[in-house]
Image 1 (tube, helix red, strand yellow):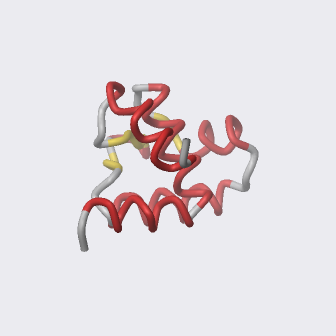
Image 2 (tube, rainbow, N blue to C red):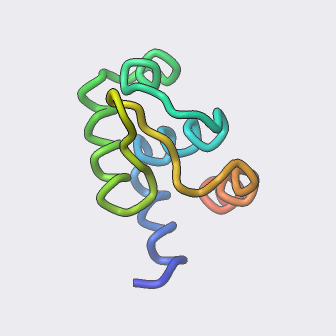
Length: 86
């Protein structure tokens, strides 16, 4: 699967997209509780999104249940433009 196809799949997975964008924008590791509080979905929904992002290689699990993106803060604008389609 090409990088473009992978990003198109992420575009369709709204919860994963929102979680990834938040992690990229914050630029720091966050707990699933913090992500849920920032975005509004249940912790279970956030944990599912984080699990999928980890399996896709888009997020890392850190110590004490903290998660962070693997893309870096410089890519947030490019990622937002591609996923939102602007």
